[in-house]
Structures are given as C-alpha cells and as structure tokens.
Amino acid sequence: MADQIYDLLVIGGGINGAGIAADAAMRGLSVFLAEAEDLGGATSSASSKLIHGGLRYLEHFEFRLVREALGEREVLLAKAPHIIRPMRFVLPQDPGMRSELMMRAGLFLYDHLATRKSLGASHAIDLRRDPAGAPLKHELTRGFTYWDCAVDDSRLVVLNAIGAREAGARIETQARVTGLKIENGIWTAALNNSARSIAARAVVNAAGPWIANVAALAESLQHAPRPTVRLVKGSHIVVPRVSGAGDAYTFQNRDGRIVFALPYEQTFTLIGTTEEAFAGNPRNAAPSREEEDYLLEAANRFFRHPLTRGDIVWSFAGVRPLDDEDGNENASAVSRDYRLEFHATNTPPLLHVVGGKITTYRKLAEAALKFFESYFPKMRGGSTRTSPLPGGNLGGRTFDQWFEAFARENSRFDALFLRQLARRHGTRASKIIAGAASAKDLGEDFGGGLTAREVAYLKSEEWAKTAGDVLWRRTKIGLHLAPDERTRVAGRVQACLDKS
Image (cartoon, rainbow, N blue to C red; front, top):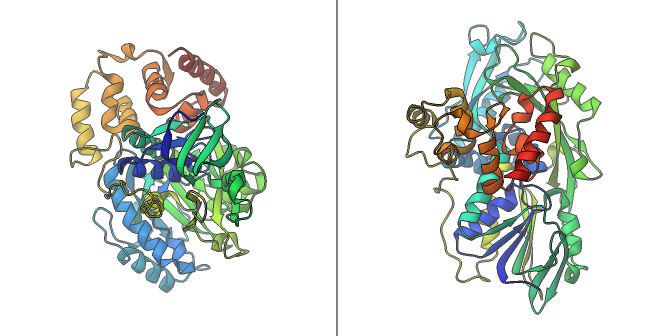
C-alpha cells in the first residue's frame, strides 16, 4: 500500500526528469522521482558535454529551438558556474564544404537570435596567425570563432536532483517502475525495489529511450497513441590532449555532419559525435569500430598530427530518443526539439516527455508544469531561472574569483586538488574538507584527487551506490586511471561505499 499520495510521480532520473522534479518541488508540489538505475546513468551522461545553441540546427530552420538554447546558455552559466564554463570554438573554413558566405550568415544569426551577456561574439580569424591554428593542417588558413559552453553533464543531473530533494522531493535510484495503473482516480506505481507502491495524482514519463516501455505500463491508456521516438546512438572517443588544442574545434565532415573536438578533463581531447540508428537495450550501447574510425577520420582531415586507434583511451555511447513525429529518414535532420504529449481525458494526468536536449532542460520543465496548473491550484508560480544550482552561489563572482579566495582559505591542501573538488561541488566543497587539518584526514586517496571522504559524501548526499557511479558519473576519475588500475580502484571504491 502507498504510504502517501504524491502530487507528481516523475519516472526517469535523466536531465529532463531531474529538472522537472526540481521545478515542481520548488513550486510546492510533493514529488517522487523514480530512477531505474543511476541518476543520469544513460543518455544524460553520454552527451558531447556542451551547453550550446546548436549552430547546425539553423540549417534545418529550427530558429525557435536555437533561440531558446542560446538564451539558456547564459541562464545556466549563471546558475552553475562551477560545472559550466565558456568555451571558444574554432571553425576552420574548408573550401570543399559550406561556403564562407553561408558560415557568416549562420554565425550572424547565432550572435543575434538571443541576448548575450557573458559570451563573446563570433569573429573571422587567420589560422596562420591565431594560436588556434597551431594543431591544424597548414592548408587551413581561414576560419571563424564563436562561443558556447562546456558542462559536466552527469553532475548537472545530480545537482538538479539535490535541488529537488532540498525542496522536499523524494528521489530514489535503482527503483524501476514495473507497473502503472489507476485506482480510485489516482495513479499507482509498482517499484522493483519495494513491496510498497507509489501513489500520485499525476505522472510524468521522462524515461528517455525507455519512454515507450513506460507508456506501455499505463494500463488504462492501452488504446491511446504511444509516443513515437527514434533511437539514435551517438558515440564519442577520448584521446590524449591534441598538442596545442586548447580551444574547441568544430569540423565540417564530408557527409555534411559536424564533429566536435573538445578540450576535456585537463589532459584529454573528446571527439564526437556519430548518429546511428539503434535497436536494443540503450544501457548496452557502445561505440562500434566503424564509428570510432569515422571520428578518427574526421579529426585527421583537420589535425596536423594524425590520430590512430591506439590513441583512444576511452570511448562511450549514448542513445538519444529523438522526436520521430515527422518520420524524417535522415537522422541528422530529425529535430532535437522536445514535444510534450499530455493525456488527461477520463484519466488522471499523464505527460510523456519526447526528445529534448541538455541545454533546454530547464525550459522543458517549465513547459511541462504548465500542463498541471489547473490540476494543482496550490502550485506556486515562479521560475528556476535565477536560483543557483547547489554549489553555484558564488556571490556574484566568477568561478576563478571565488576559487582564489577558497584556495587561500584552505591553503593546507594542494591547489590542484582543491580546484578539482571545487569544479565538482562549488561552494559545497567546503563540506567535504570541513574539519580536516591535512590531506591525510580525508582518508584513502584513490588517485586523481578522489578521497574516501568524498566517496562517503557522494554516497550520503548524491545517491552514489556503485563504483561506476563514483568513477564515471559523479567524477571522471576513472578516465585518469590507467586501464589496468581501473578494476583495482573500482574494488576499493566499492568497499568504501559499502563501509561508509
């Protein structure tokens, strides 16, 4: 039996589910979020790690989406300056691809579709003179620069979940919804990890690639149209930092697609992404050899020193649930916009969240809650636009300005260690080192700046339950370990989680 009736049951702990839960809880609704495995454990942790307007979407005339995404860059940068930072992109002009006139027109729109406060405008550059040209082939002499933002995608999900919890929401991971029915006008959900059921007046299906599976559970809506999504796999490879590549690069590939090469985790370059139709369990998605070769080939058309398969130190893939309502056969042309599908005729409300992208998750959440205004008169107005995400309240300072004071106050610790901790937790890094006179007081050092004290914090405050949660999502320490170290360190981290 349900122990209480929640206003809203959110199914899915990716960025959309976490964002909706946070917004709803901050408006005074009682919220239960059920995530089948780990927060951000699938699509939301396998992105290109960008908060961006989507320059290439202009080619498909998605002006509303681009305008919204461009505006959200500034909003999210202000909300979470510890995990989001501005990044300059360099777009080399390849004579065989889009014309210079087309690029200038696209970048003009990119600069002016939304108000810019923190991010710079685009410029034409001479790659023979600009340092950004150093890693590129000699024949690439002209190009453009523009600005977007890098983000720690996994942590963005977790911080929204923390915000939801602190506003009163209940968040459960490893809680798969296995049944969904209506009893006495209330949704009742069965969970795999509990004998009890969860009762709610309304349900949001934010299950991402599993949206159709969850929709199929809704017994009372068997004859209603199921949400249609196209599953598209996007793969990335990570290589040691390409020499001189301190900026991000946008490469035009021969098939018309865009491939990014991004500075990543201090000492690496991340290259992505691909777009392949996918069938199967999204949790088993992995880059194919053909995808890895595609990305290497794309990068090698531009970088001076060729990359080989031996340079790949890590690769990952995520499955994007794209809105397939228009049936477009070209995966690159399928919209990255979101669609909200609402059912409330003769049933309590059920909302399916179709598509979307990390950059616009907050606007998606606002749009989702509008559907419930008439059902929850007590729901407060307001917006998440100006409220910092946990750890992001830096008192109006930039991250570097805030960190300078933080490092000075905690000079008993190594500055690099403090910066890594601060980039993950912002102002809440103080909670992890509180009372420690030196690094020894933080317990076992697992490498890469990860200590037993932080692991305990990730367990108690951030729902970390497995070594994978810690090493690859709450942090990226796994990437900084040699392949033969990863298994050994994972065992030690798991033992720490089990003990703490």
